[in-house]
Amino acid sequence: MWDLILHDPVAWGSILGIGIMVAMAAYYVYLFIHNTKDDL
Image (cartoon, rainbow, N blue to C red):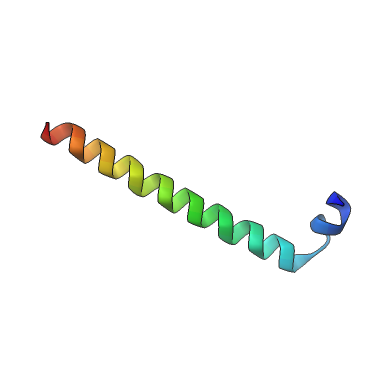
């Protein structure tokens, strides 16, 4: 199964897209918590 995913550029694009979305979401959550902590 992993061989099929590793050799499929469409799968890589999906994984990359999901990874970027997760990273951006985590970054925004981190910024939000950091800014809120400073205000309190």
